[in-house]
Length: 297
Image (cartoon, rainbow, N blue to C red; front, side, top):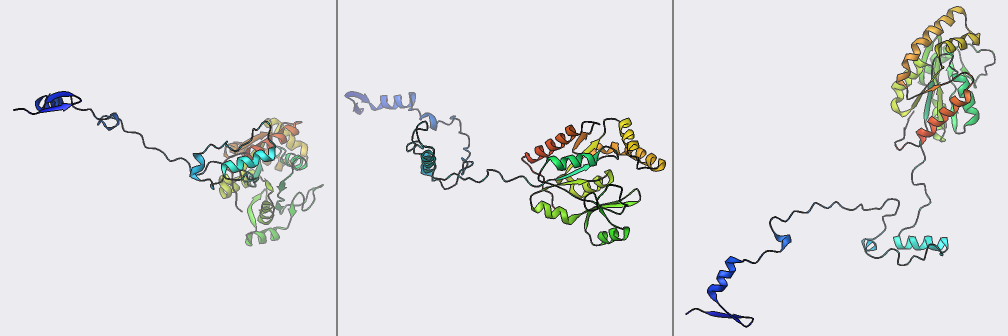
């Protein structure tokens, strides 16, 4: 005798239940099905929101942040600020969001006759926060030059003693005379937050590139054409015919080194202001970089 079962008032035999069980098995929930796609791994949310303190608790994210904030269009500003700080559970800082830019070392170089001194003199007049390093030299003083302003004029014996004491960042023998950059004044003015401007010849710039690498800004100053460069050298009237020939030949070779520099500035005759403004723009651009140069002397 077959057993019968009553389900919801209906009579079912055991055989019919078994038949139904295997004909129409109960389906698994969709999310438990073997073919249900696996979810991607969840990346953790940043612990500290940018620009805000890490004092906020996890519970703060679950409650409405605007619950205690008065209407911005009618609220007093100080009251609104206090309400925002309370809702975020952190106070707003008055400190700069980013640190001040690091002091720069700006190396200005170029062939003789391109107007390096004129550009630097004008830059000194129009821009604050720059220290123009006074180079030491063993050459004789020219008419109109001032010791300690244009150069530190020393004897060859004194210069060699400075080399022995490791007091120079860089030095070279140029046209029979020594020129070098004292370290002390660079360190002193960088510690005060000043940018450093170094005026050197091409040989000196190459040496500084090896020492400072990409931590300094290298700027190549040049004339608008070769004939203009030669005319400027002639107009200086400071050279003998032999030394003039050497300077012109040297200038031709020095122009080929422009690719070793970061920037080039053309100092067109009669347009000194444009050249100086371009140098200022280069300094401003370097100051605005996210990744700052950081020279250590």
